[in-house]
Image (cartoon, rainbow, N blue to C red; front, side):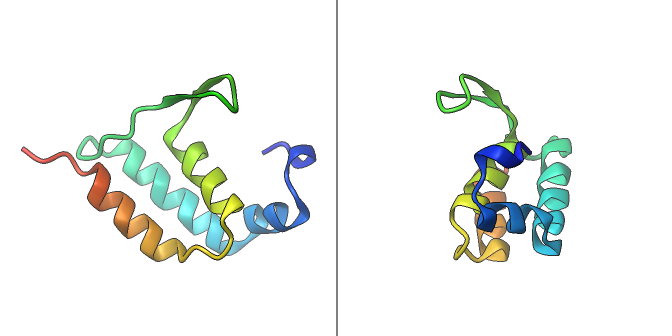
Length: 82
């Protein structure tokens, strides 16, 4: 996290327990082969952006988002069905 490019509210989010729990859940999803979590190119970063970083940045930009609901929906959307 580059503190200079984030607002104070975003920095507070990244330091919060809620963010730590969200990051842990995202990392678990990324490590689980049952989820499609490939990194993607992000024009705002001008490089590949990891699954975890992309969603942590989204959550930091949308502070009123219910993190638990967001992660539940993300699990449904990325689950690989056979």
